[in-house]
Length: 602
Image (cartoon, rainbow, N blue to C red; front, top):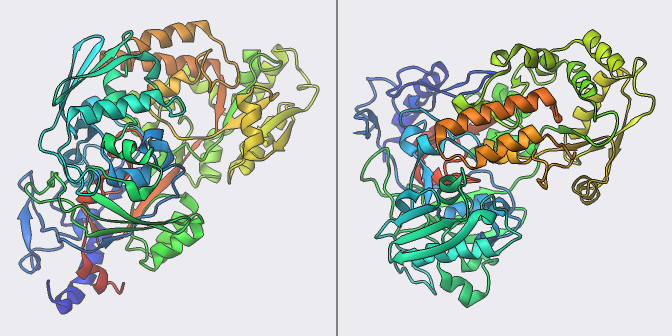
């Protein structure tokens, strides 16, 4: 370990280097957001100046760059949330932070393309990245579509389960994978985009699993390799009946769970027999840290206090307001911004009722909103007007508003005069004669945003009664289709194709009863298309169709922030490297510079 005195002398240089983003050995990493460009300077701490590199041990990474040699040991303290259900057979959405430490999936994002590598992608969304471009094998060594209806997966040999009873460190085989997918398939309460398409799941030898499809399905590879299913040993279920108790967890992952206190914390220790090595520093055994001690903090003010005092190392979903306050008081913190629609309401119209069965009214409601004004005055100038069903951080598949056709740009531009003309054309020259119910999704912040949008609509004669109920009642009205007027929903996004299916006429999530035969036809073509380039073309066509038809109105997407301490290394704010809900699988690659932490007074 290096001298404490040396680190005290270097700490000022390091902080200055972080703030100036200078002297890096890697290309600057820029978050691909449209509202703002945020450059992270995480690598500068490890490579301050040439006058000190002789005192900081350096090694070559996979690209031949000189980087600081990782340190083993220490504790990583990321922010977690309470799990809903511990059993991995119920899907990753119930306990993604917990499960991803212990269990693994067939595929994973390519860490060499993330911030510590080439910087091509920052994996900033919680459920989706370009799998064809940035996905690689994890428990699966390789796979291929042997014909349009058959996906063949080859399991990586030499991977062992954690050395805990009743599995006792045995080797992973294809039958384990088949069992986990079949158990998930049979659990109809678990979310699945592919359940209705699967014909059979079989093994052909010790290392090969074959998935047969009933019909061509566009997401066949993505949903299986990078989807929701974790791999565990069947004897866990036969021994315990289920996996709801974390004490019975045995996976192939980098960490083993040792403690859970509901509403307080989760604790994991390193798996000494973990099979992976570091992609950035080839040959380095993973994980680097000895322990993950993850506090569970619900109140964001408490989160910012924990970051400010060094009790928290990583917080991946900090709101803009709290981030700006934190940045002023704790400038050494590193961060990256990303647009996040999950906390913003989507206003869903009841399409089989007046006045929303008239497209001119829906167009008027859109043009009555000052989207850019909301971004400037309400979101601090950081946000994008269109965030659903395709997000701006998804690369080329996203088309920003300024590159949309002229008629769509007009629909999402503030023009009260034109909006009133549309209302007149629809037969409402003096506005709609009765008040319209607006059902508010009961999560923090949504009510304020509903009031803001309702204020814009008053200018064209649309007056809303805001209705706020408990979550169960709100969900019952929405998904039971018993609400009238306008409903609101929020939630994460699991990829463009899945999001587009939510607007099909027969989908459970189409709570507004939107029915457009042309959209359904286009979507059906998309769902049977397996060529990625053709898929992207069809996705863009479908998005344009929805933006023209306005089945819903979007509150502009705000920026959230992934924030971390300067002593957390090989990290650039990445959130999801593991596919659908694949949070924190990359924590095994991170290391903690305890000397730097101490030199900064923590």
